[in-house]
Amino acid sequence: MLVIDNDEGLLELLSFVFQSRGFTVLSARQGTAGIALAQAHRPAVIICDIIMDDMHGFEVLRRLRADPELARAIVVMISAKSYKPDIDRAREMGADDYVVKPFHPDELVSRVDRLRADRAAPRLTVSFWGTRGSIAAPGPATTLYGGNTACVEIRSGQDILVFDAGTGIRELGLALAKEFRGRALTIHLFISHTHWDHIQGFPFFVPAYSPGTTLHIYGSAGRGQSLKGVLSGQMQSDYFPVSLGDLVSSIHVHEYRGEPFRIGDATVSATYLNHPGMALGYRVERAGKAVVYATDHEPYRATLEAGSREAEAGRRFGRVLDDAFVGFVKGADLYIGEAQYTDLEYPAKVGWGHSSLSATVEVALQGGVKALALFHHDPMHSDDVVTGMEALAKELIAERGVALRCFAAREGQTVEV
Image (tube, rainbow, N blue to C red):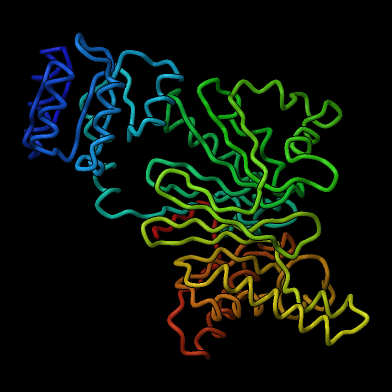
């Protein structure tokens, strides 16, 4: 470890703390000396102050990140400056974290430990905050799997990716506020589509009311209006007392244009789903691991056959589109797929934009995924019904002799990928 700071007392303290935890600690009181030590010893972790006598900490950071041999070093910036632009700039320049002085040494140790663990074994951590479909269904019959509508959080290293803003996002917002305690926070929110059960929790998302939050919202434009326009609509005064424009967080809306893009170490891609309106499924890939979030989707062959004057032509084209969807899911470590209806219920719901249990299991089997999370539970389904659907899905998988883990997603559940 290398610590660069012009405060000699802090250098001694951090050297003592990290040496007691097994680190070999180098220290420098100036930026130029710190760069020289970094280039000579290639430390695994570098802690660097912002304000120093000979060189600004951002210039030190720029030079560190420009050196290919230091590309894998963890860099944590520390400073008494808590301004959001400084924190954002540090992250944009490649800092892994930013800690505001004064801080307790244990806080810095825990931050470094998390970064090292994540670097050693990159993973995606998936947390379910809302698993219900169509409308929230709280009550004694839904306590096991939850009654909140769709919201899933994926932690990709230090990046926070949130999928859908159903009523479950309210609890997520409260948890994030407690975790970050007023520190600057960047959140990437992906909207699958703008039906109410996927956006109705957004006005109650506490971080959106914080000036220290930067919120990036991704999704498809609506029919006839922008994504931002649709989100603003539910917050008009006839429906809600606070407008989208009144939120003090920094909000950036990005409409899907068809190309994959990167967030930190992760690549995010999307595909359109077969659901009324403009619906997207998302795939997150990081360090060879992949999670697919694709809820509110119906097999194309069923709807094209039903709606086509030439049923066989509809079936053929539907198979092409269904195969393309399987290709999008293919090889995922976790496929979060909706299975809202039982096979007995589905014939009466053709064209509603949702899948039967067997159809979702079949996609998982054809796609060769490693785990399937049954999601978007019907509001009319009690815990007992969902448990029965989970058991039936496992039977269908066992009949094919495939090693595929399957579970019905529960609120509060966390899965490591």
